Image (cartoon, rainbow over all chains, first blue to last red; front, side, top):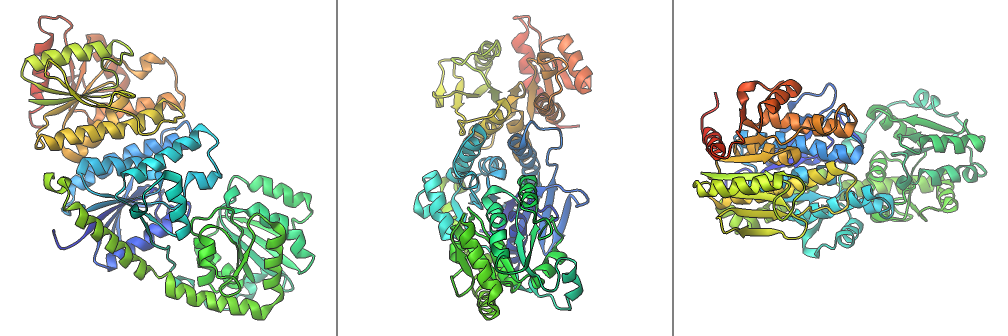
Length: 403
Length: 206
């Protein structure tokens, strides 16, 4: 075995292309793996203005042609994009001086590419399942959803190990695809606390969003069903009956129009602001001035947004579900409320807004917890040892002898 | 010489005339000292068999059963085609001279194998999307055309069955005519021409 472990990471998003949580995950994981002396290549979709090849923090980034002809629908585009990703990654793997030791795919969005490359180069494939179709849709209701679910099952079948970011996801993935326990490994998601250290006077910044007498309630996430944003909207009048507040919604999604209509019909347009997608520096400042961060998800494999709020020292109210249940310790590092229950959510938010001492207590505890448990350096070390374990098994296999 | 042939139909699966054509061609190739490996689709009779003629067949099924269209079905099936071909490659000490791909279905697999393992391929054209669905420019047809285009671009040689088709490939996809070989339908010279085409694949790229 050569001295430096080399991994080819496959992901449909990497900064500046940011669609969900996978993009920052790949960024931090790759960067910290590089610090652990792992050579990392990231192959990802292209993005306007971003170069086809660059080196960021010792990580080699390759952006592929993500298939720009018209596609009949999103799922078909994913498979067509995978066709291109495989073609370019195969050429790259053949060309580069480093021998790739493992392929590491993230979610079904790169399933075909990961599986194909595994067999073409006879190298082990690792998969991180960030989410599942079964969880996102709360069941499988259409041919598209069944197809995506089966693609996920196929990907986990082909993988040497399946990494999940919470104990909840381990049991969910095990049940969803009928996987054996010894194939699953838990590695939490991480957060870089230094990113969240912002100092300064934010009074003027705050005044752009709320009146001085209004508390700020912050939601960050895609405006989709699984994120439970509609539960927060339904809780707004209940909270306003107890405390004067402004609700700031960051993110966009297919539910936006519907949510706007509900807010309009309640006559609360002046209390609920839809900010759309927000750049990171502005969001960091907003987290500083927010009096509470709300994560009302119905399904949440991990809940990175809660961790980010904790790192930004914003008190968190989250639904007691999925990965959030493990991140938040009730009354210690945050407030847990019943999922899909506007009354319970209103209770939790009001409690934090009305009791400043309690809010300070949970946010300081939360900050310490993030430092201890969700540190990228620790996560990269764990991931590296998974790679090494898999390679140890691989080298005893007939594949290693034949290639 | 060791060749792998990709076709989405091969007996007992018969969709159109391609199935019979591949069957007759592979039998004759085997008689002319070509080791023929057919990689094809079958819904249930999966696995490897060797026919009395010596032709080896590898049948794979789609790993994903629910689909929303021909495109998603084809694109997931390609991974299994690719796996079967990679297995042939490694089990024959990496000695595969060429892949002969019939129609667009398994072009993506051939393209990955070419780029990853350096196995050159022939794109053998039975028909084109532009002829099957004239003037259809829905995104579905465009995607198939883009796969055909990729095949013409990445293929080392293109084989067609008539001068007319040679003109069509040149007209629709602007493929230089020098890259296209017309295989005669005359039974007395047919297999000679295919053997000559296969033999030319070993020649170095210019």
